Amino acid sequence: MQQTKFRYYDAVAYKRANPPKSAVHTEFLRTGRIDRNLDWLPSEKRYLTYQEVADRTGRKLERAGTVTHDRINGFHRSIQFPKLIFHRTLAHTPHLGYCHITVANSRFAEFESVQWAFYMANFFADIGDEEQFFAGISQKPGRMYFAVAIVPGEEEGRLRIDRKVRGNGVIFRTDDPALAMKNVLMLGARDEALRKIIRAI
Image (cartoon, rainbow, N blue to C red):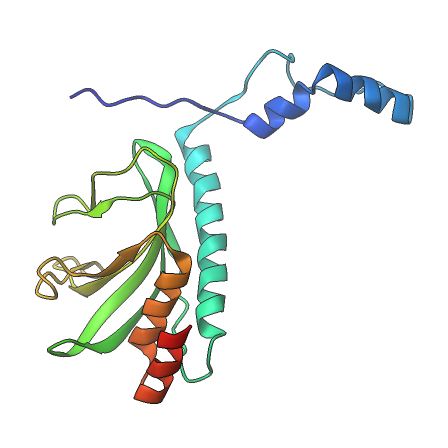
């Protein structure tokens, strides 16, 4: 199957260089000036490299990851998770990526202690197998929040999904940010009284 080759351009800069005719007219009436500071011809688009797209995507993901982490840690002083934010973009589609937000240990089902990591992505997909982290990536715009059980990998500093937990290692996966926050808080809650409060929100 042939891979689709994406081309990206700076849509914001293009719109600024090509304002609607009425906007140019209005700006002239307002200021009496005509803007001649255009970096390229109005009809020209500046195409971005994959690295530029990946950098922009990464910055957006990490900002969203920081906001998500702050909201979780702001819920209750007894539920605090470490801030471990880093991102990855997908090689052939650098406008798509995911952000690692935190990692923790929790008692889970029949397991005394499960180490897990919480992520968010700017697309929706299934969690894949050992070879491919994601499978069935949706072409529709969306967002996904998920937590997976993890164990140290063979390469030093690398983690892999612990598939002994639930057969696929996925603790939860949702496109609902409120449900994702509730699930993370439940994993972090140490006593039943706090779990009862979380269930009620």
